[in-house]
Every structure is written in structure tokens, then in C-alpha cells.
Image (cartoon, rainbow, N blue to C red; front, side, top):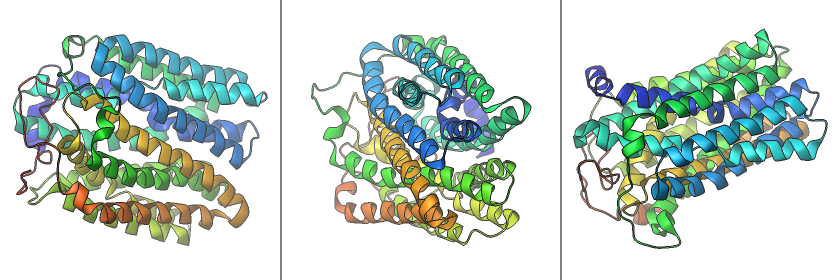
Length: 419
């Protein structure tokens, strides 16, 4: 698998696009942590921190499919870079103005979230034209899922480092400035400048007219809820133990566990339909969240956090293929943006619920929200099994088309299921 990843990275533009996308998504990947640390440093409550993070998440959820559809219609550079700049300006207003005037704080995070550029879906739209062969595109998915966990592992540590060296406000400013540079690197590349979406059927629902995609979005809403609640619960746990640095280590351990899980998962081939495999992986993900309610000492808790993240990257990698198999033609960026939206709405709800849970029942209650979210995600997949077992499209691979991946099997893996 390592040799396969190197083969992908040696392709022209591939390393630049992957790196630029990860750097460009850094503000979004660390926003909840940065907002929570900033609000707590300003003297705000857990409820306020959770509410601001929730507004950011909800705004991102609204903006992603809208911007994703705009990318499909007008191309990447005309949408991605302006959105990144406006989003960074929103966070800059929060960092400078603080939480003294709450309407401005809420407006700032709403703007930042609404204009978060859909770089994640944009990258997956570019892989076919950059890599050509279907097998290489599939493997790029697996590499993409693993690379995301590198960001989610390093991101919290970078935020806490910036806070330690300067301040939470400085962390917000620096992280978002870096994000703009990442988006700039992507949109100035030749693949991004020349990419055009495949023709699409005119329909006001767009990608949402697929029942299978709707089922997946419902499940990943609850996966997002679980992770969003852990963001607030982790801070409460760190406060209980009197060390702010514990928070960064818990979040980094969660990402490290996902990194390890994704690497191991991508090292072998898997037979069978990815929809069935997704149910198993999400079930194991839910099982990993439950022990967090024990809230042991920092060392043991860090281990539990790492274990709870092991099945996150496999779940994400598998979900990419399920999106491909069920998304209507010509909606690739929008479909992936809806996945981000569903996840973001869930995370927003999770942060909003976990804040009051801490204040009403203590840290263990907030971690119980994560466990409940994981179980609910599994139940959705089980309840919608018949819908998910009927992909909307058979395998289609048109070189250079943004729909190469529709109906494709899991990245880097063999599948015995054909629609």
C-alpha cells in the first residue's frame, strides 16, 4: 500500500493538490477546538463555547452544498478562493472583537462557516483528471482518508502550540491565514483551473434525489454528533484535571487512532459490497465511543481516545465509495459537500448538546452523548439497508470526467458487488 501511495504522489500535481487541500481545510478541521479555547480564554462558559461552535458548524452545513453546486456550475477558482478569504475574515473579526458583543461574535462565526470552501469535494473531483486510471483514483481515496487524519492529529497540537506561544486569538488568525494559502495553492494549479463538471440533469434537489445518499447522510449526521460532543467533553475533562494541554493530547490521540486504523484498513483488499462493510465499521466505531464515559486518569483516557478513533478513517473511506455509488451524474462536488454538511450539522448539534450536558451532569454525561451518537449512526444504516443495497449507478469510468467514481468500488479494494 505504501508503494501505491508513492505512485500516486509522484503523479504530476497530485502532491500539490493533496497538500494544498489539507492545508486549506485546516481552519475548518480545527475550528471547534480553536473556538472553544478562544471562548474559554475570554471567560465565556461551556454553553457559549458550544453555541458558537454550533453556529459555525450549522453555517458550514448550509454553505457547503451551495458552494459545492456553485463549483459544479462555475468551476473551482471562481468559488474556492473568494470563499476562503471571506471565511478567514469572519474568524479574524471574532479574534479581534472577542465575545463582548455577542451578536457580532455569532455573526462572525456564521460568516466564517458559511463561506468555508468545499475543498474536500473539489479534490475528489480532480483525482480522475490527475491520475487517469480507475485503480489509482480508488487508491487516492484511501490515501485521502489517511491524510485527513494526519491533519486531525497535527491540527489540535498546532492550535494548542499557537495558544501556548501567543494566544487563542493569535491561533485563530494564524490558522485561517494558512488556510487561505492552501486554497490559493489549489486553485492556481492547472487541474483546478481547467476542471469542468460533467453534464447534469436539471433537478432542484440535485444530489439529494438519491435515496441511498440520503440514508448515508442520515448516518453520518450522528457520527458528526459524536465527534462534536467529544470536542466539548474533552475540554471539560481537561479542566477537571487542571491541565489545558490534556485537551490537545486527547484530540490528537483521537486523530492518531484514526490514522492508524485507516493505514491498517487500507493495507489489505476487501471483498463484498462497501455498504455492508460500512455497517460493520460504524458498529465498531460506536463500540469504541462507549468506554469514554469511564473518564479515567489522563494517560488511560488518552489511550481510550486513540482507541475510539481507530475505526473513524475506515468509516470515512468507505463512505466515499458509497457516495460515489449513489450520487447522480454531474453532482460530484455537491454530493461530497452534502456529506460534509451532514457531518457538520451533527457536529454542531453535538457541541450544542454536550455543553449543557457538562453543566448538568458532569463530564461523563457529555461523553455519553458521543456513545449515543455512534449507536444512532449504526441504527440508521441498519434501518436503511435495502435502500443502500441498490446503488443508483453501475460502474462508469470516463477518463477525466468528474463522475469517474460513480458506481466505483472502494478505493484500493476489490468488491464482489456490481449494481
